[in-house]
Image 1 (spheres, one colour):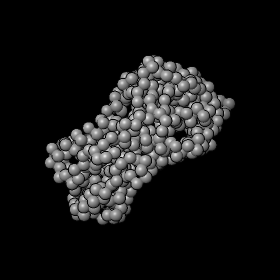
Image 2 (tube, one colour; image 1 turned 90 degrees about the vertical axis):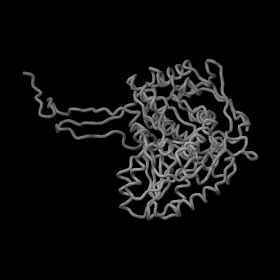
Image 3 (tube, helix red, strand yellow; image 1 turned 45 degrees about the vertical axis):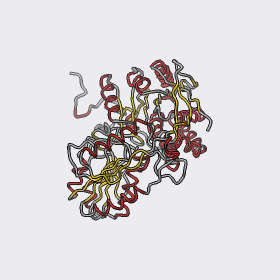
Image 4 (cartoon, one colour; image 1 turned 120 degrees about the horizontal axis):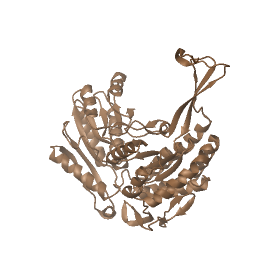
Length: 499
């Protein structure tokens, strides 16, 4: 693969960073392979991009909503055309297996198709007024310039979850992709240019969070910050936006779980738990580091789960038979090792020892094996409450449905969960009493669809989810009332006469 030299996109022009500094992007499955470089942007670059977006806003918001949707539809056609090439780039740059790389791009395509389709759907509401001669309306208006700051693990899909609803509603965008996957973002930006979006409507600044990301959060020309990533950064963004009276929508981490009840179909339970724990090497915000299992069936479930986990094929994601690729970087490896050591210190019964994989070609990548352990729940446990973002999994025995729900809720997070049961009363109890934003029955805790809201509660988000629900975060709902009568009549019986 020929190295890609990514650039910033500002006012429709490809630009180097003001400093001229660049950083490398490499293949986490083989760190000897440098895939390309990208600009290390500074606050000066951010200022140029925000200024371009601000200048383009007035014309873009006045553009027909149907026309805005046509640009997005054209983008969808280009994604479909380049689907296989994009999928391979995703796999090379973020390491996940090729079927997951393809799924990432398909999800991006689905988001583009969904948003393009929204342009001919009802937009706003007509509400009856208290006064017969009046008509009342609820309209949506764009908020202005939206900063979209996205993670590496879905480098094509998640950006479109945030960018496309923003653009459709008449906002302009400055996109700051993850420094771990700048080349996927650059290729996406090339498609935006090819789709014909007007200059300044969509802008890209590459770089690190402490430079470009922080400058976006604090720029006075940014009206909305949309962020997907860690709790620590999301919390910081919330605090900084509050100081500026600036709106933000943050989707953060999770300490998710699969709850396996005593009547569960074990074939479904094991399969769902494996997918929840080890897809993308546990590096999804909806990955489950906890499998909460009724003690009646826990021994048999655990035996089958461990046997299956032991058979997982780990390697370069370009091999179609690989189930689990590498971790994204050395920091991810060190976090994984730290969580594993903490589990041992907290008295876990280790069932699979995990560890670094350094045989053959694996020695050149960030490869690790599943770490699986059994442990009773403790409210003071670090490993049972904090996100590991790796193939680090606890099997937690419980004695009842009520205890399972308590254990699930006993973390700072509330993003995703799944319950495996054949009893509709039990899954309804779980649905109504667990604290989550994305839930599943007899399925893994992964598998979101773009036409559903995606976000969490507690430390997992601030109630403004992505995907289909982002429209509310990037628009103002305004009330508009029209009098068709020949005199003024006031609501609530208020007199219109001046005495």
